[in-house]
Image 1 (cartoon, rainbow, N blue to C red):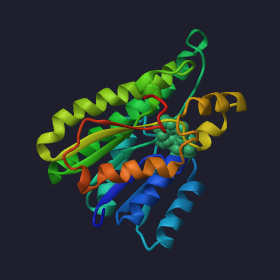
Image 2 (cartoon, rainbow, N blue to C red):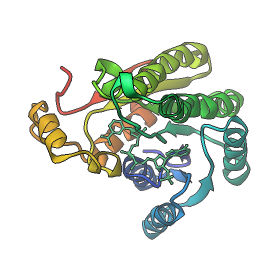
Image 3 (cartoon, rainbow, N blue to C red):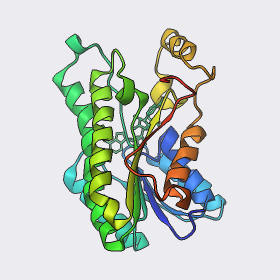
Length: 246
Ligand code: NAP
């Protein structure tokens, strides 16, 4: 489905990014595996892709750093010759109630999730404009769609990603570049592992499908949005949450 395509997945050393990178490789894409600190996990993803007969390369940077993001995109284009799919998946949480939230925790979440996505889109879109085609997929969250107590910084960053998605979709549509967002609900990864059992059970009770998402549930949506089947879909938010925010 993605044969001949080059995909950059940011945060591919993490749970959802790994699943997206593997799903893209299974569908024929060459994958740029991006990570920040966890080289070991990124290397495991590379080995899994190579074991499938796929092609992958590792790239490391802090996406919140404008210059580093430029170097990331330049590096991917230098290595693979092009970039067809960008998945802005790198992200963090620093949860806390609004009245106690530190300025540093607010800034770090916005800088990583929102500015990091802008940084990568800013430079990848230039290459996609040259190619007159491309797919940008931003991993937002149901927290950005519906808000979530204790996540003012995170929800603001994820809602911001939706505005970024819609604006970029309007700017880039004329060159056959689509820009969409995926808004996962609760996905079983390191990010959610750290939540208390009480919070996990409370979330579970709000999911009509009665189960958390697996990273592969999100990867399926990412494959669809990158495929030819989605070539006329742009500026949309695909909520993948088992019915949590219906
Ligand atoms: P995860 O397992 O914690 O992975 C996070 C990834 O982001 C890691 O690869 C990490 O790299 C990377 N990262 C963090 N800060 C970075 C930075 N400054 N620069 C570059 N990379 C950075 O989390 P996940 O659950 O897979 O989440 C992936 C995305 O899905 C996030 O954007 C998250 O907000 C979103 N999401 C998750 C859920 C959920 O329930 N899990 C729900 C909705 C949305 P290193 O580990 O290598 O440092």
